[in-house]
Length: 69
Image 1 (cartoon, helix red, strand yellow):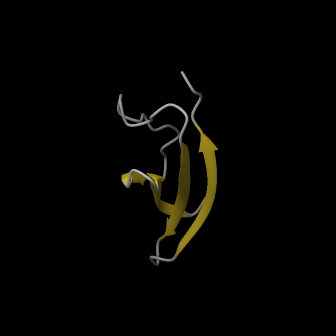
Image 2 (tube, rainbow, N blue to C red):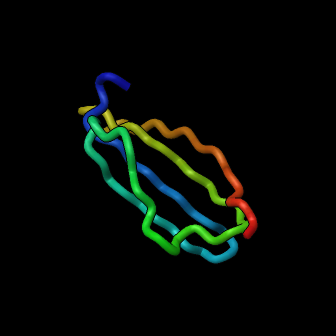
Image 3 (cartoon, helix red, strand yellow):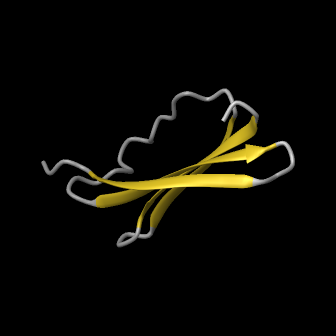
């Protein structure tokens, strides 16, 4: 979103209840997940949100499965 003031990133794994939340600048184009957070063979949800200058938020969510070892 070209008018975004900031971004929100959430990665969660429901079974293990592990979660990463990050507030990022609107100019962010990459995010590095800490070693050891992603476990092989599990499904994760990732949500990326934009926050406009008035505080309104809009999120897109999807899921992915990490490769098994």
